[in-house]
Amino acid sequence: MLKVLQPFRWLLLLLLLLFSCLWCLNTGAVTLNWQQLWPCLFDECRAATEQQILLELRLPRLLLGLVAGAGLALSGALLQNLSRNMLADPYLFGIISGAGLGATLATLFLPQYAIALPLAAFAGAVLAMALVLGFAALGGWQRLDTVILAGVAVSFLLSAVTSLLLYQSEAFAANRVMFWLMGSLARADYQALMVITPCLLLCFTLACLFRRQLDALQWSDQTALSLGVAVLPVRLLFLLLTAALTASIVAYCGGIGFVGLMIPHLVRLLFGGQTIVLLFGSMLCGSMFLIWVDAGARTLLPEQELPLGVITAGIGSLFFLLLLSRKGSRAL
Amino acid sequence: MSTQPLLACRDLSFCWTSQAGLRHVDLTLNSQDRLGIIGPNGAGKSTLLKLLAGLLRPASGDILLSGQPLAHYSLAQKARQLALLAQDTELVTASTVFELVELGLLPHKQLWQRTDHHDKTRILQVLHKVGLADKAQIAVSQLSGGELQRAHVARVLLQGAQLLLLDEPTNHLDVQYQHQLLQSICSADLSLIASFHDLNLAASYCNKLILLQHGNVVAAGSPQQVLQPALICKVFARPCVVDLNPFDGKPRVTFAPGAVDA
Image 1 (cartoon, rainbow over the protein chains, first blue to last red):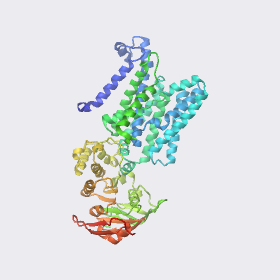
Image 2 (cartoon, chains in turn green, yellow; image 1 turned 30 degrees about the horizontal axis):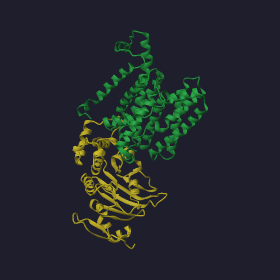
Image 3 (cartoon, rainbow over the protein chains, first blue to last red; image 1 turned 90 degrees about the vertical axis):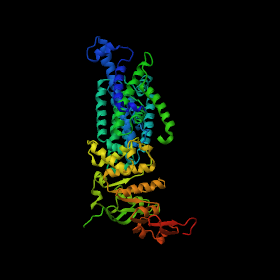
Image 4 (cartoon, one colour; image 1 turned 120 degrees about the vertical axis):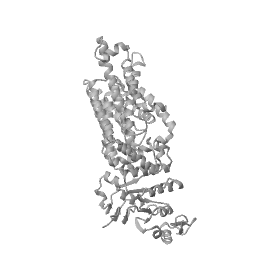
């Protein structure tokens, strides 16, 4: 790390985020120059098309990218903290396959209602989470590793059901579901923001209040108990919060993997491991990462949009391998 | 009732479904006593410590902490009185030493309260006490095993707990760190209850010993009273001699090597 920059790292990060926002607003199929962009941001557009592109297409998409990236990274950081497993990720809860099943059902059986897809995806995510948490409750919450393994099992089960349904269905519907499963911000509207943002704020506020408890849980359950932390209630509260946050994001954006795994790792390297710093840093970096990925998804191929999940999974799995080779099996 | 014992238990029993558990344990610990729990594997040492820490609920009997039943304490109240130093062998945190010690504030702070300037001074004070003042900003992953244990002791000092419970604290430490750790606890004037495998370490650092076998208290008292050759030989099923440690004059147990007739 560059020692000189240490005191300014938060300021640098915020400036970088701001710059990224402006850059991503200006990136897309139609390139606007800065003279066109500035007045539009302050409600004085010169042309109606510019206004439409910026305020109705790009701005909601940018904002959704910001909250979704922040939410995924925050969930990942919280789960890694709670489970003391640095490879924990919201998707290990089976949430994505639960949402996938919901989305598939909605697409196949209720194609006429646009609202059905996010609702069904959310319901599916909640179902997956309930299965995983129910299994963990049966085991008495002894080890969170068991919760994660249960998540993997539930994930496979629900994916199998989804695959069966898609196999039986017509090709067009299957295509739609597949594209949704691979993740995209194309569905962005202000309704999505109204759902995800409160979840994100609630999660972050509570995490700030419980920062010492979360710090203590990084050591061991016994140490946390000995410090007076009610380990089980705190863990359950944050498991539910992260699950709800992830489910709301997945419902609108589909499957965007590896953000929750990768970003907290980077933040730990840059800013250290104290909970509050980790969470805030993860949110900022997660936002920035996702809007850049989205900008890439919109522009890498001409006339066509790449699914976000493809890019994040590509970058993420390389990152994952790098991490494994650096830390050996200790990280597992 | 002029002085109240810090911790007392009366007729304490506990049953595991699979193994023996504990039967009718009585003990009294006064302020600044250091009690060593010794005995072979499976004698109930860890069970006793977990009962005293409130991690297990006794089947019968009472545990009184400063005269109040342990069950009446809230988690935070208990944390201000006694601390269990767990063996966190797997380190996954990227915290610094300062942040580890700062955890000691947890039972004293409400959710919304900040760590203020006064707290920071106190953190540096306790770090100074355990000899880690110069390592405050170092990541805990860079500490040696002994330094990490001492950082935990500093955390307990900040926590304000008078009584420290340790389960085989010297298990993973080499000789130098074993003594450093116990010395830093002794010099911090904490009361201590610890289980030991090393009888001589227990004799050197504890003023009271309790010898367990199959969940029963076989002997209790000063090291001189408990470390009797005939008794130790019987409990550990191996001939031994007991003489005096030339450095501190405490009893020293030496077991016979090789094959023995039980």
